[in-house]
Image (cartoon, rainbow, N blue to C red):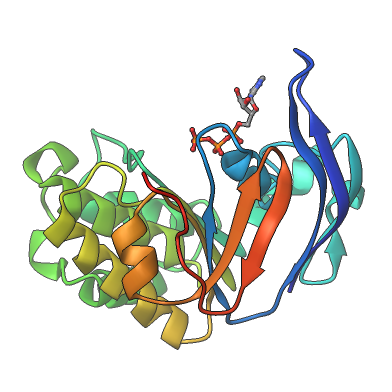
Amino acid sequence: MIEMQDVYKTYPNGVIALNGISVRIKQGEFVYVVGPSGAGKSTFIKMMYREEKPTSGKIMINGVNLANIKDSKVPLLRRNIGIVFQDFKLLPKLTVYENVAFALEVIEESPKNIRKRVMEVLDLVRLKHKARFYPNELSGGEQQRVSIARSIVNNPSIVIADEPTGNLDPDTSWEIMDIFERINDRGTTIVMATHNREIVNTIRKRVIAIERGKIARDEVKGEYGYET
Ligand SMILES: Nc1ncnc2c1ncn2[C@@H]1O[C@H](COP(=O)(O)OP(=O)(O)OP(=O)(O)O)[C@@H](O)[C@H]1O
């Protein structure tokens, strides 16, 4: 469960990015976060993995109050939250396999478990055959699939994605959505900020629309609702 109560965020330059957000997202939900550019979508989702801290208000992730987590414990929180970015953020000098294995190596999993788990997630994103490739040898869609594999290798309960299809062509974007749906089918919560109107209006899920730092709409099987 993700819970926010009266969350406000003012950046040091005085910009008010979140202006009183309260929301609950239950385990296993699939939520799109939509809204105009600069509305506060990225700030909203950065709160969930503690990339940014609220100026005031309370954020609970699976019963843990983020205000009570020391900076040194943030990596522990992130083990339970997979993160997918628009620009993939793969490590260029590591192979596909190594990029995905990295998150397990830092927590000192056994080599046998690492191999098993990495191959499982590469299978899920249909990239087992490219395990030895380097990121620059892959298409954008393939790189995003590696980054999704990396995000779930620790078996997180939540995956947060900030415009995961923003750099991809339409066909590839649908493939990426298919993978997110399969991850969601296994009970993982998905929170996805997106500007992709067609996807939101076709694969219908809960829609939280943010405008000027507030929740303007929150709909079960909602629509994108903006022209762009
Ligand atoms: N680190 C920062 N420092 C200062 N202001 C920031 C920072 N990050 C974002 N902002 C400002 O906060 C507001 C909300 O930004 P945010 O990135 O959350 O919006 P967004 O809805 O994700 O936008 P987009 O759709 O363009 O990605 C904007 O006015 C932005 O300029």
